[in-house]
Length: 257
Image 1: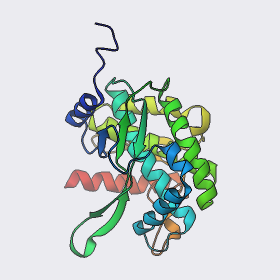
Image 2: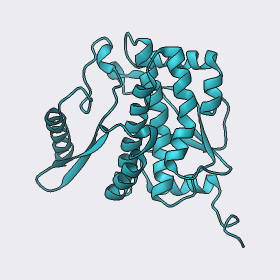
Image 3: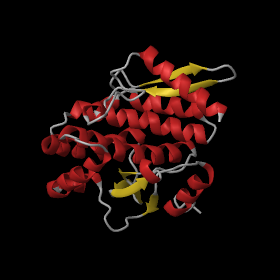
Image 4: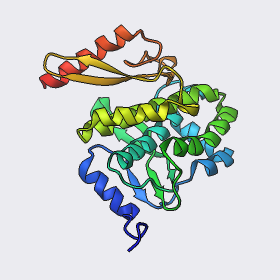
């Protein structure tokens, strides 16, 4: 039996991931109705504009560039988590990925809010040579089309994708108990090419009994531009000491629960 015949199917790989890694974005083997590859989405400007319109439900008074930032961040987060899981579990990367846009409700009662998420479809076929190539090949056409449609610069979008790569690898790595390896793999992906921005970085937080990590971001989701919005805890517009203080308080509060 040759090596290709011994490769797990995409469905088997998904099941392996879900058995080991908690809180993964939704994924299917193959495409379900409504899913589209990023290159096809880039070629369908009407659909892209519709997705950007739907993205506006995430916060009040989202301008076009903020909708674009949220959409690129949401798509790249879902993709990054699955690429991280396959990489960390030494599973063969898929030949490609597609996404769909899904509205959902989070919270209960007065705190309930409708948001947008992006389930992924894993596509069989010849995989890119490495994870960096997968991200660059997948997002380059979509970023160009989103710049034309919404006015958010390619540099701003690539920084958001880089942040998602770091956050996705750290999230999955923590779930698998392999955070150091996950961060090392992410650093290697971000070291060169379009994902390298010199700002996205893993930052340590020293706690009384352990060390935690968070991602100090290079990109901006522009939440602060929405009605009632503010700078996120890891926002590139915050100083590092401010970020650290906020994350230290967060990690301590979680430990106390």
